Image (cartoon, rainbow, N blue to C red):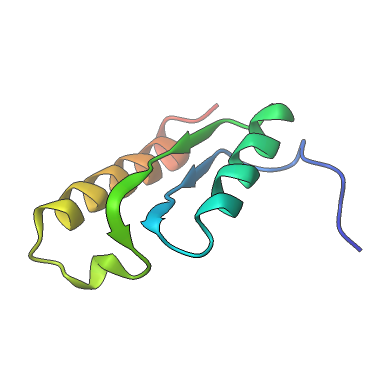
Length: 80
């Protein structure tokens, strides 16, 4: 069964891609979490697709990686 509790969840970083079949679900999930008081950072990446980060030399990937690292730093070192 699916839990209806959200109070135990940590903050979330959600990164929907413009051309990803799960894009809409990512936004829906972020909204559900926010509605239940979970801190959410959503980084929508226009022009990207699923697994776009395999192209590591591209500027868009480098920027996304910086945001991911910052989200991890925030979650592990700046929370509470």
